[in-house]
Length: 269
Image (cartoon, one colour):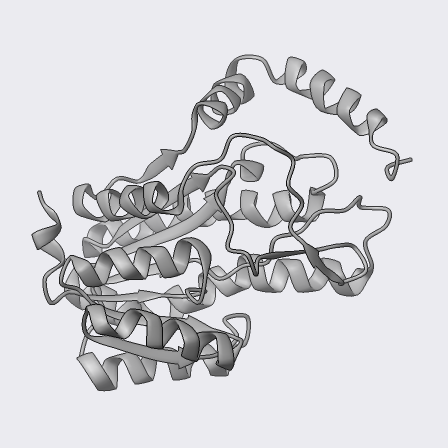
């Protein structure tokens, strides 16, 4: 199956003003899809719209995907413009790093609200249209969802929850011919404006640890292939595949490795 399969298909992408979301929107437009982009920051959303609109039929709708009224408005405006939803890519999320001890209750709640509820509320709102089109849902996860990482506990928890909901929805929606896929994304090239939240809820510049990264285009193409081939699960990068294998065959080794890593991190005591 080629990218021609996206011709005139309606693809809704949450959290698509930058990074993987915006790059996926670009590739979808180039493949002939009608694309809806979304973001909380109206100025950044407008900038993304102006950058992407020359490449195809595009709609931009602002809104916080952890807020039900915003989610309903997004789906309503999508259906009003295009009449259907063929694919929903749930990408809205917050990057986070800090120890559990240093993380405030307010930040814990915010990460869960955005990274988990912000992924599943759009599915709830768009579900009837997806059933009508026998469509696809793609949840954008992370390698942090394979094993709880020190210094990113609540982030890992929000990503691990996507495994459970993808399995549940995959079983429940199979009879309606709705495809549900989950992609575990590894370290990816970031936009210059990308930030990361700490335990106090502060946004900081994304740290550069000089580790191998995959391109946003590679991830976007993997997402498109998952929709085309109706793939249910995809783990990105060699590191991710190794981590995935070790979680099944040697969890004690992983526990030792990450316990040692936690002891080396000064902020975790």
